[in-house]
Image (cartoon, rainbow, N blue to C red; front, side, top):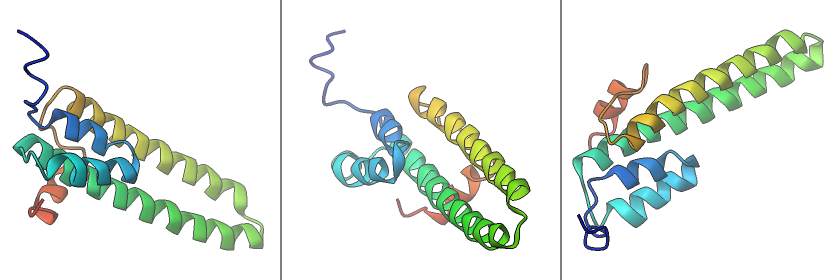
Length: 123
């Protein structure tokens, strides 16, 4: 198999990989890569990563807002540990999805994977 002749053939794996690299990576994958070469695998990964990025940001910033309020009242350290645990949980979910994207699989991320497929079915 000649790799030079296969440069233009992409089954969506590259879109999936790039979409996991922050929200900027998702934007590049969607607008720069997926729009010209829509694939089932690319759409699947884009839907998953969009919900993962949104949920991660919302939970992270909500916990930070709560932590700021609690920190000002003196109970900072226990909730700071909670923030770290939540970040670790989101990293594990990200890692599971990223490994699936690298392997070219349509493997749903636990908790978010199935929701993402129905919520963002237009992608």
